[in-house]
Length: 234
Image 1 (cartoon, rainbow, N blue to C red):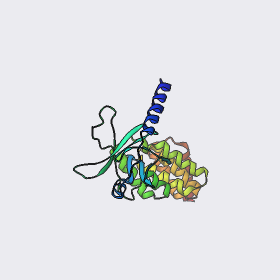
Image 2 (image 1 turned 90 degrees about the vertical axis):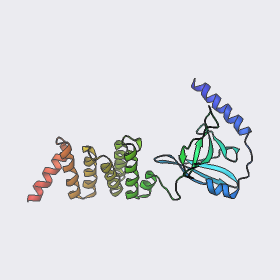
Image 3 (image 1 turned 120 degrees about the vertical axis):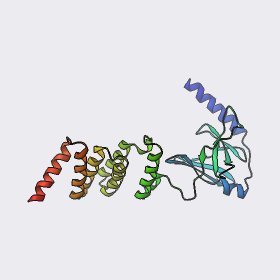
Image 4 (image 1 turned 30 degrees about the vertical axis):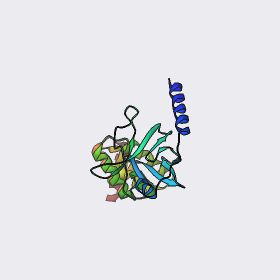
């Protein structure tokens, strides 16, 4: 079944490619449609033009769609046809997925983002931690179970930086995780460890204490808190 689907996809791609047209995009059209479209809360599709040819940048890859018309194109990597649309009321621009069942159906799937818009992960990558947290909190507000705020993923990123001895970055990532999952003992345990390795015993104590408030059986946290209190009394 998978082979049949793949063959059909390749056949469709071949047919569409051979039907591709040379489109003369106007400067006004290129200006209106160029930009980033929100594919999901932490992923963008970038639309741009080179030498009057339409290109997409999606998940780090440069894609040359098959132009079907001025306003429509096919993307083999997504196995989807798109059109540029503008909402009649809000006047906002979208990428609309063209339905196979009803090509005349108008949908508003991927909103064109404001100029300069960045996803939370882009902010995180650039070290803009406050903006990253704000973005992730907004995702949580919309969907508290979103895969983009997965506790384990942030914890893994934190420890990746700990292993690189980049403790400051690890701490910032783990602080975001704690802000997103304040009821988890593990996020404070990890943050406490990062602070300890960075040489900040006070913040390590603060976070290990928070761990114990949620999980009093955490052995590592209990040992450190008791040792810290004992040393403070000397």
